[in-house]
Image (cartoon, rainbow, N blue to C red; front, side, top):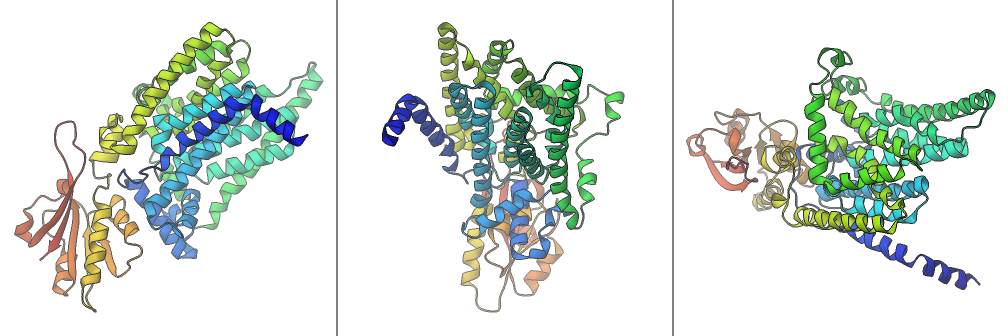
Length: 513
């Protein structure tokens, strides 16, 4: 009997099962050439923090020293124990977070529209969307924030529709996870009451009031648990720096009264340019179709998803001092669900039209993804992302290769001699990126020595006089003198991507001779 039931299930759901397998295969293409893109500035910082926290238990709140929440770095620590490449370990956490987001998107799509087709299409779109594909392959906190946001939505929806405290509590844990990941989790807390729309609203003032009290009580449970988890950070020093560092990134509330359209208009334009290029743009077409197709029958779903997508973008565009594509990543899942919802439509003619549009989206996305997997410099990244990840000092081309060279140099040195490496900067791509790769070779000393050099830094001169094998690692754009003039020998040069004006920076490895 059981075999018959299983056989019947597979027969009735064969297409969806095969589709799900294909979607999973496409998603895990993220693991292919995971480290092909060079280490990025923030990645270097986060991975280095994770290594330090792993080595020293008393420093588990180290990210608070820069006003950053530590959950993502805590998540990296276990992977560092069995993965030799620290960049792969850090990026794997984001891949797994993206997987959690995709599963959440699929499940939430089914909850909202009661359609396996919508659930499968939404999962497919997230799996191959270059926007998600790119950032799920970076050791940055944003993929984890996105995952927690989707799952908080799911459990809050279940809590409000079923009037269950246990689901509200689980939503609180998801909110707390988001808050321990990154400050924009505040958006999830603020948008929580929009989900009250999904609750059954009885007739009569007394019944409505009682329902409102229940929903408020469930929401308070979610908020209290979420904020309670966030307050774990008070156990570490420098908790106050979170608020002060946030002020470095956002304008005060009074900004809306003094200059409301700056940077609102340019940042909104930029946000949709990112979605147009990395969505790619066909996703917006499908999302508009989904809104029009469901505005009558599923108007609650359309309104709430639209608010969760566009609301944070508008607020960040108004108050953010700096806005990059990854800052809006946590809004993308709700756009994906809106786009997938177009397949609730019943008319065969329209189904065929949107199926063709979806096929075009798949082709467009896979071509973009192939570039990211094989040759990121050829991928059609937005200008701001290409410059930061591939062209400027924030891009870490050559750092891994230099670490391999230095390890070999250390092996060849006689006992009693040290290898000392000076790098530009004190924090960021260098020296953190090099320290991350050299973590298993403590006998090589890596130290930051400043920026924009007109002469050889004094600590490197002293190191050479002391008999150490001494090297200097610096971006060519930040070292102006002739190396030979200061007793430097160029060992190797690692070029970055070509900028639009034809210029090309590179990372120099030089020996102090």
